[in-house]
Length: 320
Image (cartoon, rainbow, N blue to C red; front, side, top):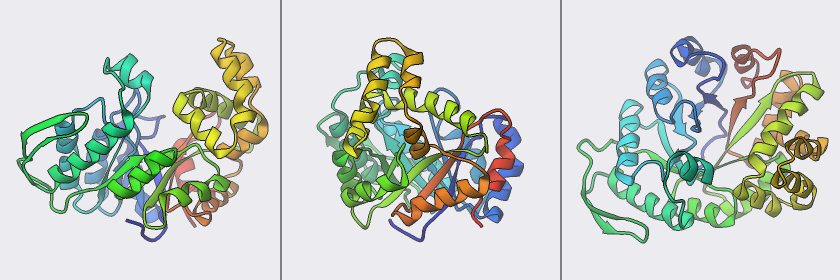
């Protein structure tokens, strides 16, 4: 699925209602953006913003990054994907992933069991269902009996898998068309690319806080890093990338309930590695460094901060 390097943005923006974002979305392609990717946590779902955006902009590629494979059943995921693929024929990528224990178990009441196997089985089912066939199969983690999409999309959407460590990266390369990752620096990209291989499109969400106030940006970045990198999957990812020792004091303080101490334990160098910040021109150059390191599709996520106008930031961070 690898193609010419792309330049994406995360939708919807956080600072304004979804329905008010039409004007900006219609501008994105003329600004130089090729992609718009959604996110899903406890705000907008992964599909609705793209359903709207697909009707506002007919020259962007859209993707979910990601839709959880536990929060929706396999057939519902196929239906969601087919709907978006029909709204944006040939321009939609169905990105799926495990998500986190908090989202899956604490918020949705679903056991998060055997994530690798569930991801593999979901990709296999989606490939068959989105191609229009009737699926009756006993997978390792679920069984499907007689499901067929009423209106299979033509063409079927490409598939992408959220992947951090080697096992999931190899699964993305073998069973999907792309791997989606995030919370990495440009210098981390070659390690991820080496596992994913040369033919798997590599997509990453890049967190960008376009402000010249470095202290403010690092304050914002520390909160985000502590929230994410204390999650076991992300902690293991950064162990693999070589940051295990430098992040250990943060994880220990967090586990002890010392949130303030955890933030203070994150060195400036880690924040500067993982959060893009500075003048928009410098941020744009930093995002381009990800592509130069082997990333196919950087997807900018503008991080709100005092003095940062999200709409102006999207325009300023567009590729030159």
